[in-house]
Amino acid sequence: MPAYNAAKTLEDTFRAIPPGYYDEVVVVDDHSGDDTAERARRLDLKAIRHPHNVGYGGNQKTCYMEALRDGADIVVMLHPDGQYDPAIIPEMIRPIQEGTADMVLGSRMMRPGAAARGGMPVWKRAANRFLTAVENLAMRRRFSECHTGYRAYSRRFLETVPFLRNANGFVFDTEVIFQAVHFGLPVVEVPISTRYFADASSVGFATGVVYGLGTLLTALRFVLHRWGIVPCAKFRP
Image: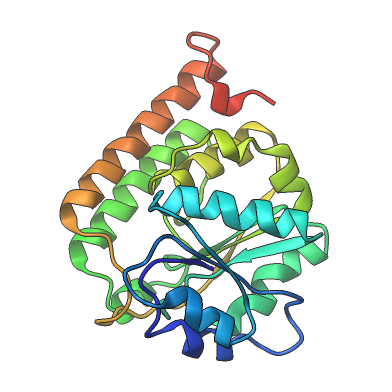
């Protein structure tokens, strides 16, 4: 759980995880202004607090390194803000257990109207579809959504993809998908539902614009690297 100011929603999210589907829950508190780390410790979760804020991508790097260090075979990224439904975790990990995927994306766009019913703002749905279309064109894929924060990874994936070279911001998620395609690791999507509410974290318009531009830049770097024009360290083994 990459966490930032998640004290209000952390416990409810954790309690909703289906019993028997996890061995350890790691909460990385990215220098929150509330008592997120202390709440996690009171729940007997493994809590790590950054001494300063490093960003969403930097938070994930700590999460995955800690999971690998503790011997994880499958790692699920679940936001502790309650936006994503923990009950879907069995469906998220099944393709990895069955050996058909090394990365699983929980897509809000697979079921028509699901994102709207969950309360996703119109501008976010439009931006999501546009950016996903551009990414699909660059990767030669047909993903329904490339901007979900609900993901599962195999150990092989995290040991193959050089995710520590990625950005510390939100574009980290985009870079990981391009890396999966570049390294030939199978990716599967499963339909999910989400809900937007007051205490759920949400990217604002300005941050969304920066993220969108970063996504387009990542697509350009991917294409230039693939064509052998400009090598990019993110796509080197």
